[in-house]
Amino acid sequence: MSTSTEIVKLKEKIGYGLGDAASSMFWKLFTMYLLFFYTDVFGMEAAVAGTMFLITRIWDSLLDPVIGVMADRTESRWGKFRPYLLWVAIPFAVIGVFTFTTPDFGTSGKIVYAYVTYSLMMMIYSLINVPYASLLGVMSPDPKTRTELSSYRMIFAFIGSILVLLLVEPLVEFFSKGSGDALPNLRFGWQMAGVVFGVIAVIFFLGCFLWTKERVKPINESTNSLKDDVMDLLKNKPWWILLGAGIATLIFNSIRDGAAVYYFKYYVADVPGFSLGFIDSSLSLTTIYLVLGQAANIVGIILVTPLSGKIGKKFTYLLAMSCAAVFSVIFYFLKSTDVALILVLQVLISICAGAVTPLLWSMYADIADYSEWKSGRRATGLIFSSSSMSQKFGWSIGGALTGWLLAYFGFKANVVQTEEAQYGIRLMLSFLPAAGTILSVIFISFYPLSEKKLVNITKELKAQRDNAE
Image 1 (cartoon, one colour):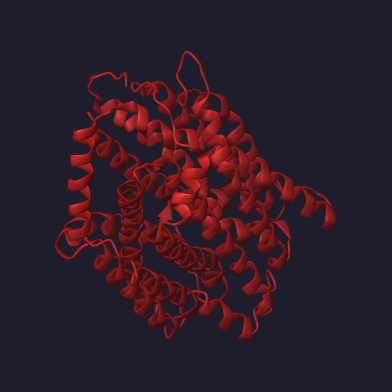
Image 2 (spheres, rainbow, N blue to C red):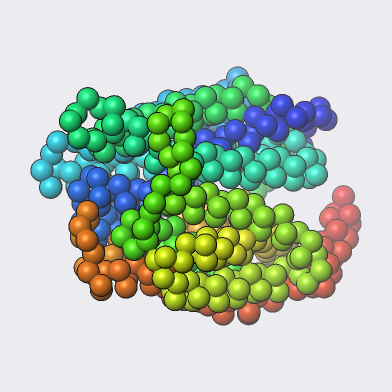
């Protein structure tokens, strides 16, 4: 394997982080606001939007491995993965703006437009995000440096998320009032907000392209057959368990995220909070709630390493998801006037959710070692790509369920909701996500890879590799 021992400096670590800041801005728009945009601004029925999410995201999930294979075979003067940051940045922004644009079509025309633009957006997202994620593996051969780069990526991802959550509603309000119409034009407001975030995303992606470098060259050795790797995966019991736990966790997250805006608009009196004098707008209670959640996610990430070091990954996962289930159930009993308690529970639930994300990816790496120990063959790429697919599949189910549940409870956009609709929205912030956490706990309780077993597996694998040299 040909590598460079060149030190990765702070500027490059920041550059790598900028890539996920760009992706996370739009991903957070999709998970928190896109369903709301489609129902309350665009004019789609909630059930129609939910079905669209399921169909387009499943297709996007299946596309990831194809893009990974394509990127592996890309040859350019910039490397294999960096070129996609340059080539796809502007199309990413353009399609992002089109996604948040409302055309003057009839109902059928709007549905077709939404399917086309959202499908293109998901394809473009994968086309830039899969090579970006793969870039980590070729920036340095040093595991510690890779861990640092991964940490910068996660931190900048949350910075991008917080940025968009802080600005989206004030920007929409600002541009809606400045559209030149007699009344605020929300369609124009959302479109221009998309333009702002698109420009920022292009700058971040180009910064990532310019400030990073590919150092690790492809290894020249025979590869396992795809059939053998797939068969090893299908026989991997811990992978199946983690697959179920991960999907359940993502359903929990996506239902809570997708229903939050509806909860504040139609159940809680969303009184404006802090004034933003520079754009003549203010932070709404919805924005404060969502930003607090992102900040609490970071706290969870910080806490998970020392906690899992003491009680193990499995029991940390069980503790975090069990607490999230309890806090979610309590959430149902809060009244619309219990604003302080709503925010406190949001923080507690988000700390639990933040702790689970790094645990999942760390446990997938353990599963790769387990697979090699059991079969003598290593298929890390297949395990991680299939895990990425499962994560997107979980978001697909959760996003679809959010739209379907709103329709089931009789939700109608931009009107006073019935008691049944308000009841359903409250369930989507409490008992229904709690069901996802409980299902995740059931799955992970069967996870067999304890820290003691993993230590033994690591020792045996090291001995086998030393003997093979």
